Amino acid sequence: MSWLIVTDLDGTLLDDDYLHTQAAQALDTIADTYPDARIALASSKTPAEMIELAGRCVSDPILIYENGSGMAWRECTLCRPGAERLDGFEIESFGRPYAEVLAELRMLRFQHDYQFRGFSDMAPDEIARETGLSLSGAEKARQRVGSEPILWLQDDAALERFQADLARKHLELVRGGRFHHVGSSLNKGRALARLWRLLRFQFGIHAVTLACGDAPNDLEMMERADHAIVFPTREGDYLELANPNAHRAPVAGPGAWLDAVTDLLDHHHEAA
Ligand SMILES: [Mg+2]
Image 1 (cartoon, rainbow, N blue to C red):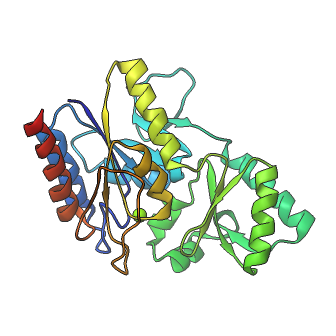
Image 2: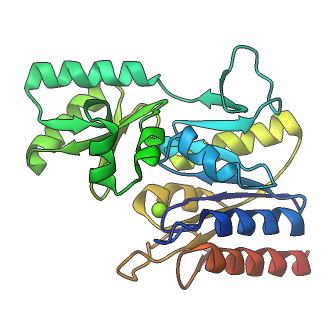
């Protein structure tokens, strides 16, 4: 049985300690134990941020970046002519380029006097202060490909008007804890479906899917997948899923992630 495992990072594979080395080891352990499994990381992070974690892995995870704005593959897996490249990865964008998203945002701000600050308005040290990232982390987070994180400075009613204006321009807004994300293709569930089809029709792999996540932006991905592992929020709550094959992990982090994924895969290998 071939598996496609798609996992969120923060609050799922990564806990607050940000133990990237352990996270990479957990990914490599799954790749070693189940050579038929393809692993994809799905995050709101940029390709530059995700490549840092992928670079610590011996296995080659596929990267679904910026909430499903696109995918990045190790170079010469897909070998698409003219594809954008970054640090040995080939980037495949699903939505409109970052410059276009920014142009639309500037136009809306100009026309309606909306009050927000985006990453493009901030220097790396301000991003570092607002997000808790290191300065080099903030620089990587600023290398956007298809979406802009914004700090909203008005009330909820204005945010709803803004969201409706974005929709008219075929842009989406995904609400986050502090930063909201704006882009034209922000859906990890759709990205999972695209990746599944690509494996099916380009590589002939008919994969059973497993999605791991913790937050509302992981919901559709976990409902579309054949199996899901739900990780608890900071408050200890779990998302409710419309997926009969949903399991719960006790805590987030590389150790709990590895245990939960191993349990599920072992169970199905024994059953097969
Ligand atoms: Mg998360």
